Image (cartoon, rainbow, N blue to C red):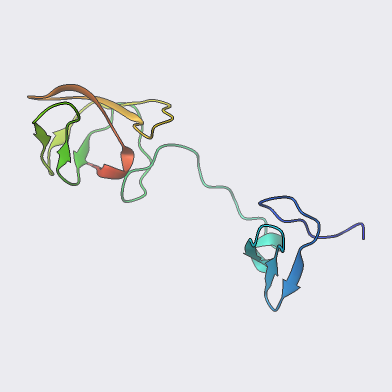
Length: 116
């Protein structure tokens, strides 16, 4: 079989069709045949906020919920506006570097902020 469908997750060639889905028996991944044939445009890369908006350096964001500051007894209250954020690559998920009035410099996760 030269035109065999391969699993997009593990690249296995043993995928089979089950009604309108393709199934990989090795990793149990399922995907739609329509999505496979219609080459969808990839989503734009970048850091997204809690609502799915793309963030950029210098944006202002609002904290969505109360966040405890690690190593301190202070709390960043929900609704706090943070101006002039900087995006960074972080392996621990804290991909926003910022300065918050009354607390100082800290890193935030983009899932806990929304674009102002």
